[in-house]
Structure formats: structure tokens, C-alpha cells
Amino acid sequence: MSSNRTDSRRKSRLSRAEIKAYESRRAEERRRLALHQEKEVESNKSDSTAYVMTRDDEFGVIKSDLLRLGWIVGILVVLLIAATLMLS
Image (cartoon, rainbow, N blue to C red; front, side, top):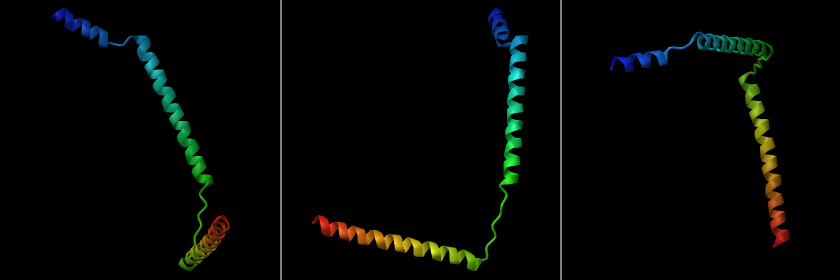
């Protein structure tokens, strides 16, 4: 029974080459993550344009969007009625 226990211990140990390969993969992964984080920080700095609007300005934008949407819906309803009349 003790021979089985020593065999399992030997199997679970990593060789020096395996440890070295593992450490190099980890170092490469850390380097890639650091580069990615640096790029994110740089892109966030350049994209930091803030638009500040008053409440009245925001409601004005919403009102114009709703009016434009109303016109589009009205035109589509007219086209639908015209197509129904032509095809019937």
C-alpha cells in the first residue's frame, strides 16, 4: 500500500521544465493583461467627452425625437392604406 502512495506522489510532482514552462506562460499572460489594461486606460482618456445638458434641453431633444417618430409613423400609415387600396 505504501508503494501506491509514493507512486501517486511522484506523479503529482512537476518536473523543472514543467514548472519553468508554467512560470513563463504566467509571465506572458501577466504581460498581455498589463498591456491590455494600459490600452484601456489610454482609450478611456481620449474618449472622455462629457455632454452636459440642462433639463429643458433634454426635454427639447426628446420632444423633437417624438415629433420625428410621429411623422414617420404617419407616413407609414398613409403608405399602408394606399397599398391596401391599390391591392384590393
